[in-house]
Image (cartoon, rainbow over all chains, first blue to last red; front, side, top):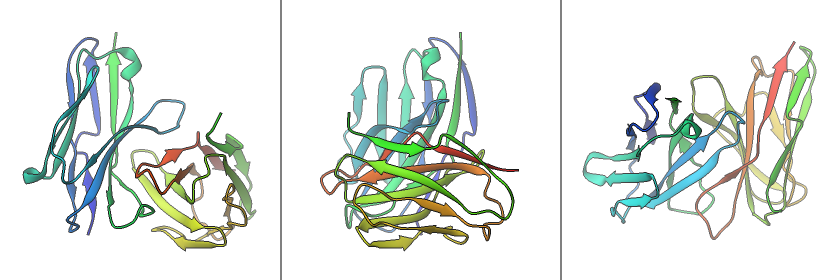
Length: 116
Length: 112
């Protein structure tokens, strides 16, 4: 079975604080992709990052960083010096690597509120 | 600009009526997907299509139907058999080259 868990339903931080969004996944596939998407109030899901299961190198993009640990099946997302524009629902997702058209399994999402 | 267009943005339907949600993409993507989102829940897959004239049921296909007559278009019909259709519906597409899906802006359906 494949499953994505985001234990934090809602998080509130004050602007400029750092915040980490947790993601734990379950899969029997040996090769897979992991994703993070952002859903602002407008509703559209915006793709943030993709990681391959065989590449555990952490990644940094501006104020965003991602920590992938295969040993604990986790793919956590950290926002440094948060801003009000970061307020959104963030989804972690998993997809097998068998074919490019495989379905994507989403976690329940974490709603982040950044307070000015 | 390339992208995925969903229409309408808001839709109201009376109980017992069928309604069709539009999804069009000009990204030349082969695969298209329909997801349903309920408050506090993640996205659940309704139907997906990997190629024209072919589609597969997702996890919650009951009460829904789709067609894929053109590569660019993947309309979703919410039938009267869907017992709780009020939700936010998202359409997505993927290409062979990329593993990530790209999403439209969604349609919020309310049954009145």
